[in-house]
Amino acid sequence: MTSDRLRSAIRMETAAWSKGWIGATLVPGAYEPNYQYPLVVGLHGRGGNEMQAARWLQSVSDRNFIGFCPRGHVSLPQKGKYGWSVASESAESQPSLFHSMSTGEIFRSLVESEITDPIAAGEFAILDQIRQMQDELSVHPDRVFLMGVGEGASMAYRLALSFPDRFAGVISINGQLPRSLRYLSRFHESRRLKFLVLHGAWDEQLPLETVGQQVKEMKNAGLSVAFQSYPTDEKPVKPMFEAVNHWLMRQISSTIC
Image (tube, rainbow, N blue to C red; front, side, top):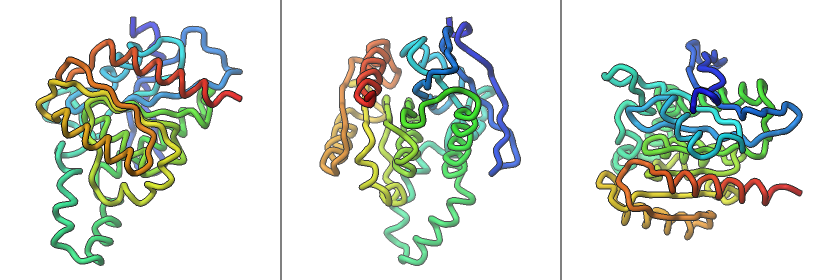
């Protein structure tokens, strides 16, 4: 059961923000403090919460890694539901606005977004929570992976592409690659990352053809991407989690000297 692995629902204060951030931490039952575990950061979908992501991570494995699932910092109208942006399409609307802006205006927009954009705020909050997790538990610094579903997958992409030196790889399930220009500034460094893209063939919100084109663009840019589709819609299914576990074990094994 998930409750057997759920270590705590904790409140973390961040240095950058004067408010707390809530998340669920999952630790293997036979946790060994002298062993450095991989860390998988699970990012829930829009309208979900940290417990949704925790259940997904448990479906991947109950012993191979430490899991941390932060709660999205944007509260939605429905009680107990959260997101990573004010509007699910907000991150994708920015590039169209750039067409009518000067270079100076674009630069000012990007700088201001670091202060006011809730997506940027979420990025830095998650990074701070990961740092606290590494201080609290035995985590291998070079084996930190991001796994997200839906909007959470888009957030995982943003984090990895913005800070490629902080992560080992990204697992995207039914997620969209962000188009904002600021996520391309460290694209060359992102070639060290590993990407696993899993998508539902019947997803009407984000068609499989669109994701296939995104994967093609990523590969053309020199990124290491594994891609697989499944007979499902936007909801993740058991074979996806099994594929995630196998992929993670391959990545971890390849880094063991």
